[in-house]
Length: 265
Image (cartoon, rainbow, N blue to C red; front, side):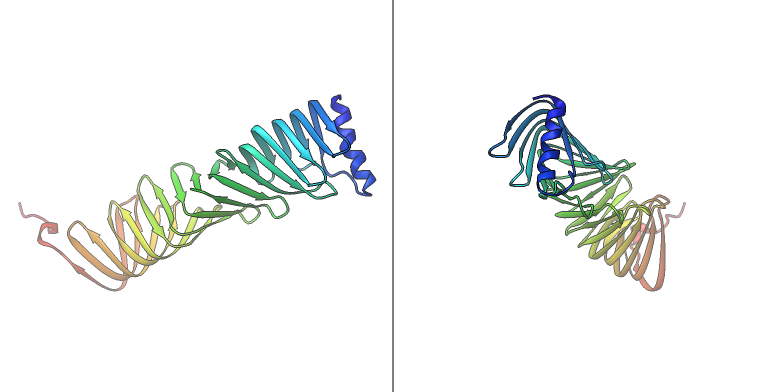
C-alpha cells in the first residue's frame, strides 16, 4: 500500500468508532491485516500534532492499543526527545497516546540534560517520566546524578531521586536518602543521613541543600566534618566548595590536631 493509504486506514478506523483520529502514521511500505487489525510498516513516522515518532519498523495492534517500534526510535515532544532501540506505544480506542515504554539504552534528552536508564517510561498525559534500572541524569557542565529510581516531572521541571541519591561533579560529591532536584535553579534538597566529600573536608550531616550553580552546600546538623586530622562538629555548616571556604553557624566544636596547626618558620 502507498504512503497516503496507510494514513487513510487509521483515520477510517477512528471515524468508524465515532471518534476523531488522534494520530497519523506514514511509511514507505506496509502490510495490513484488516481482519485482525494488525499493521506492519517500515521507515515509519507517527504524529499526533504534538509529538513526532520515527523508527525503522512498526507493528501496530489497534484492538490491543499497542504499537511496537524497533531499530532505533526517536520520539520528539514537549518533554524532550526520547530515544531507545525499542519503544512500545500505548494508545486509547480514539488513538490518543497514553504511555511510551523505552528499552535498549533508552534516554530522554531535554534542554541539554540527559536522563538514561535500563527502562524509561513516559506518561504522555502528565508528562511524567520514570527511569528505572541504574538511572543517571547528566546535567551540564559536569554534574552526574544517580539513584535507584528517578521520576522526572517535565511540566514542573523537577526530578525525584530515590535512595541512594548521589550528586557528583569535579569539585566533590553528596549522597543522601531521597532527594528533590529543581532543574531551573539547579538546586537539590537531600534527606539524611547525608555523606559529603569536598576538597575543604568530608563527613556526614542530617540533611543538605546544594546549589550547584553557585557552588554551595548547606549542611544541617548534626554535622561532623573532618579536615585533614581535625574534626569539626556543628549544627549548620555552609561549604563554598569552589572557593575552599567553610562557614560555621551556631554552637560548634573543633578538635585541632597538631599536624594541622601552622608551622613556625
